[in-house]
Image (cartoon, rainbow, N blue to C red; front, top):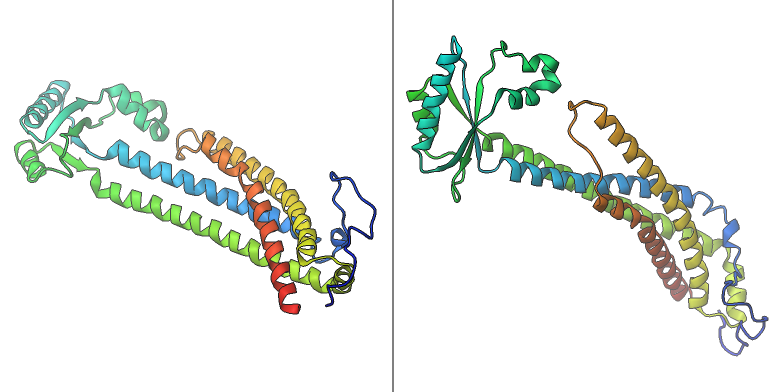
Length: 309
């Protein structure tokens, strides 16, 4: 393509206001880009849900770790009457107080225990005649990790009606599960980003083929590759912004509906409430989609025209 010895494109056209960008390529009417905003909207929607899921899984793992790490629970089976139950609890408290590995113990009252069981038993969880074990919350001393050696065995030998539950047995599995969810969500975000880039490359190359004669004419008139790339760049950014906003609204509505559904579960479902960090991350997705679309379109055009020169 000849690009020298011709007057520049700006010299052959009247000046236009800076507020209005000149469009010498009819990219807005391209059939190849007709569905691009909807595709970007769908990808932003998926990326938004996956991103919020990753952030939620991270908070869930942190809450489990901080809330249960360094904690033990002792279950004391109820006796034939209240006096026998109190005697068993007293023996357990004396046993735990004698251990240097334990810094604090707390007996959960009946109302607290009923609140934990209310989602499953309803109002009957507060019935005083319901035979429920007494729970003793145990906090390990600083620097102690896991159950002190021999503590569970000695407790069961001295007080057969008591049993020690180690949260660490299932805490590690729960945290690993949350981390796995976080990795899966992050992988989905990366795959969505890769799919967006590949789609934009295909659409941009298709547009270059469709408008090849017009581009050659622009080169003859003095236009540079950067000018042509700018035409595609701004068109891709415009379409990405339109699709990104649609995807953002859709993701926000789904998250809002999911929050309402979880709240109506009356405690049977794990808590879910997007935080301000989640909403900020969602709001950043449309600008990110615009930036990815603009840069991808520009680099694709410049690389393709450089090979054709």
